[in-house]
Length: 481
Picture 1 (cartoon, rainbow, N blue to C red):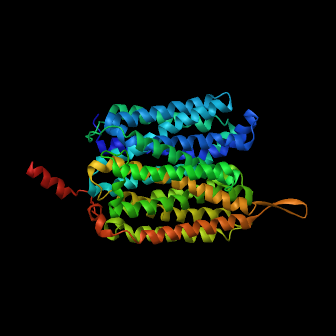
Picture 2 (cartoon, rainbow, N blue to C red; picture 1 turned 45 degrees about the horizontal axis):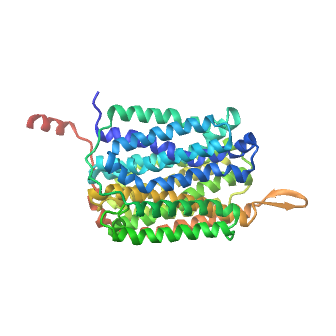
Picture 3 (cartoon, rainbow, N blue to C red; picture 1 turned 180 degrees about the vertical axis):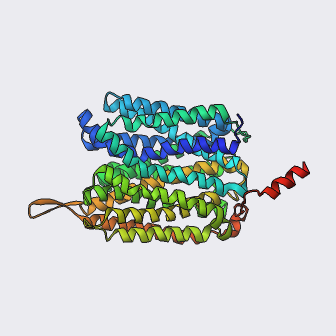
């Protein structure tokens, strides 16, 4: 059985991306139950999330060098194996320390597999077909965070919290076996010596910054440890910039930011990640704590957003993007997301569930209109020798943007107190959630302004309309042969 490398890389990476992104949302549903299981307070259980996020941040910077050193196929399959095995171990954990340790191991796999997989995806597809690759990529990116709460709610309610980790195992095994059978290694540049100074400053800087951003909403942004952690992370990242611009073979070649299109697309993606992942997180809380939906009902209300993404991404990739280009599509998509966030700020306890599902389905069109063009355009003018480094930086920004989005929205609703006492009774404070929606809209509008800096002419190599071959084309080809 012969499978094209475009198909093989797409299948393996889509599977890897799905379990990596879903893990960001599905575990949150189970935290309260895990705390009761191990008799630990909520603040202690949060270590399972923070440990994973910090581990991802620590390993992302080394992914490009390892991919070029060992081969992208070997690193991708190895990281999927680590993530899958760690997921099974998380489900088997007998104590909270064990669970946290296995989550750190899981984060190591997640930190390596997404940048290396993205590199392989964009090396498999030529410039003229990058929009097709992005249409594939946007599906797991949007579907996973939408279905994660549903699957997590079902498992926690009807089976066991352990299944929020076990669910990764069959998907991971499928991606691993499929990749071992059909995935070929790719040509890749020989790396220079390992940049230990760049690795230490980038990994520790990202890890500390991720920890501070994740813990800030719960422990207080002015708390000494949080201020110190964020400050130390910022100083290390600043040192990393100085080091990487001076060494001959940097681990993270920051000169890629000199590419105007990559720089603009990166800013748009980061801001969109803040708005999108923050909004999905906020809506899960809003629907459950504010509107008193069950976990399953909240998840099924958010899920139509993913179907909007899947449906619209095909039209955008095949028709709209080649004709219009990324700039106007991304701007319109972000303004649609901002409008949806503002519309949701008028939602109250009497709002129809089906109306909410329709609104979120429409929001999926805006999400597809941002993520797909930004990913297609970002690498259009990046040379092949810098693809692995660019994908590493791109993924680090997405991870950090998502963490900032969740932290920002958590801080907003915590400051305004999501639950208040009225006449001696606890009552949801809808104003807190509505304010969070205003913040999401504001970030989306800011991202739209950033999208205006993208130049369609820079992305011209990706704006190619593909048509299916007609019977006449097949006849002509046969005649030539």
